[in-house]
Length: 82
Image (cartoon, rainbow, N blue to C red; front, side, top):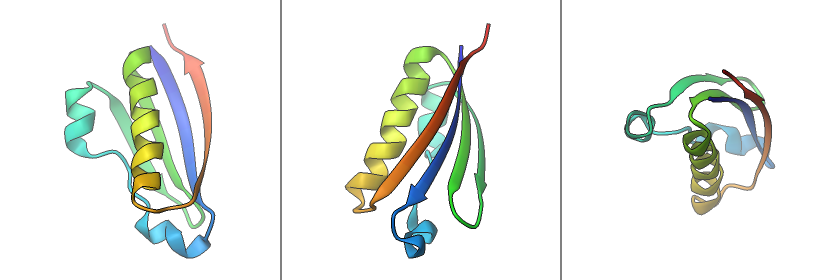
């Protein structure tokens, strides 16, 4: 099991309101535990699950925001959970 703590920052602070998290359907299909918070400067998420699923979720989160035209910075801390 992996636990990823992710902060997604818009390059343009106005873009914070339009950033998207992981859809509920994606989380259910991939059996991930998920905690989401939006601060005044970032979209903060904790994702826990199997290694393959967590990596898939991180890729999806970043790519989906880029696909929507957002310029973002993603900072991630990953820990192994047994």
